[in-house]
Image 1 (cartoon, rainbow, N blue to C red):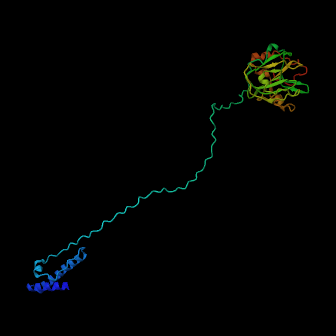
Image 2: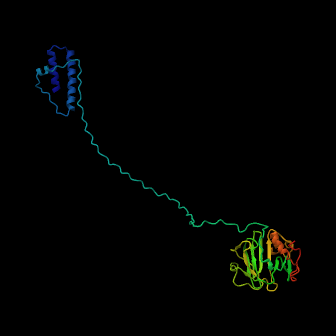
Image 3: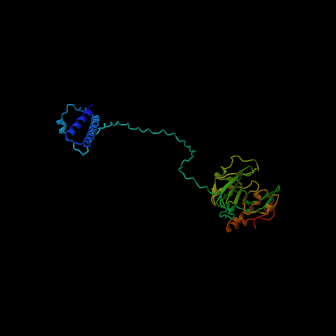
Length: 324
């Protein structure tokens, strides 16, 4: 074996130099360590190891001075690790998640009125409350009035007359509004021919009966053909208003007596007929008042001066008079 031969030569060499046995052992051990390290180094080396020649001379071995007592440190050849190849990874592509649609409630459409050019008018009250309005205009040409019959009277039938009579002897006279008023009802019938009721306040209305020629705007509110004779039932009409003193028509009165009716009714007052079962079935009877109490003092005096309770034999006074 190569190693045994090296040891034998080294042993002969050291003995020939006069080394003791112990020194020879130490030297042999040291040489063994060195040789083992060299073998390991050669084994791990990537290069081909150089074989040790058996023909190595003593001179070449003597030229190698191995100091004693100094440990030999073998520096291992660094192992070169291969540089890892970096394999690029694909850039991740962002895929947006698919969102399920969230159901939404559909609101109920709200009807929005279309804007108009004209503002919506504020509703006005149909009437103004006034239990004691003042009449500031005569209802006719007083120079044509021959007599005035104050209510109430009783006609044939019997027939209660809660209105007054104005006698003008069949002469055509004008009719005027005694105060600001508006038409609320009327009738057109054979024998009338026209009757109109006007509202002065929420409580007070005035009535003109036996009007022969109302102004056109009033006549147009009623049918063109009259009702049957004496069918004086009224119907609701509206749309025409008047100021005090405005002309509302003309009349010659009834064909027989030549007079016409003028009545005033106040819903805030109950007269003596309100407790009479024979006549309390209608507000025309129970709310009738003295028409002349609402005129100014100067105007009222002209009507009172013409009072004649006895002139109408067919319509005598009945019960307590309205006008005192």
